[in-house]
Length: 467
View 1: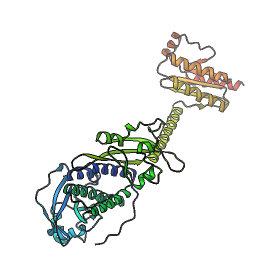
View 2: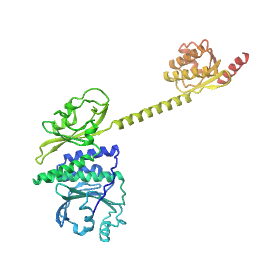
View 3: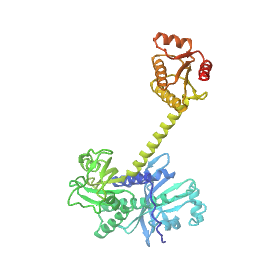
View 4: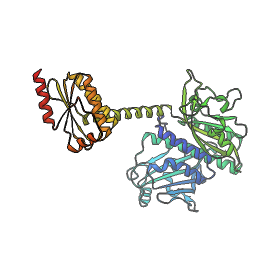
């Protein structure tokens, strides 16, 4: 069967981050079970109820006829030991032919209607409650054939998006790459030709990743490889830099500052020093045209040989500069919206009501504090000036109690409008409020006080008529 490559799909930032986490886990994995566990970070949210990893074991005329289950996952149970018996693929030969010579995933989105499924397979698979499948052939260029397959089972028909198809293809390459590397190292059968083909396949995988990948040698910290997007992210044209290692070749700061990060705190250095995974976020001065700062999220993990000895470490990094800038802009817009809403609410809570050509009234309701007093004075002064008012009525009927804060607010408001040539009139003072003001020895001389808002309006109207 032939396969025409689909055009490249630009991944979302969240998917790229998940894929980076998956490949970090693949680099750490020491068994087929750990490989599947690393891949579950992306595969599980797709919604399957079961996932199987099979290795092909026997072939006839280039066609796999037996496969051995090596890892499996079930919804609600997690990773469980696989059955020991091999699977006879000849009973499902028509389906096996769909994936054994492919490098792209085979997606059976609706088994009931998919013409690639014959009646025997359709009856068998639907009898197990499976309505859709995704088969990821693990094709190794180093071995020269398919070495396994990952199968996802769904209880309902499942349509796959363009991004999901692209990630599944990349993931099948990655799983095949790490699985083949493990098999070749364990069996000690790797030849120079196979190593070169493996290198080419790994390069193809790395160059199609939407994240930067950098591998450093244990002990020397010298660069071993980097993919093109990783080099370009740093504003470079190649990985080498006159013999310098990564922490000598770049200026690295703590995020959002110009405080240099000690190289011993960098995730890659810490992983090479401890053999444990490490993560972090840094600002790096780009060496591209115009310089500039890029913010990188880093995840480092050790790379070990078959004996468990670490011989290198890989760091996967994602440029989050634009994402952080967008988040900061959203935060700024949100804060501005909150501020505007708060200001509008405050203005509505202390309305200034025009009662004539030169009379305004402000009913005050609720508790007064320093911040609200300032806001009342601001609204009162602006309104009096705008309307050229001669009388300003402050009605405190709705003020529940009086204390020094209330007294101070009233005196400040009266003094402020008096400076504009406006006569302050205080109305609505209840007996308990009056007693409190007297007890506080508040001087209300120069302020006309009346018992009700209606009396205040009548007084202001009479004064305006006399003029």
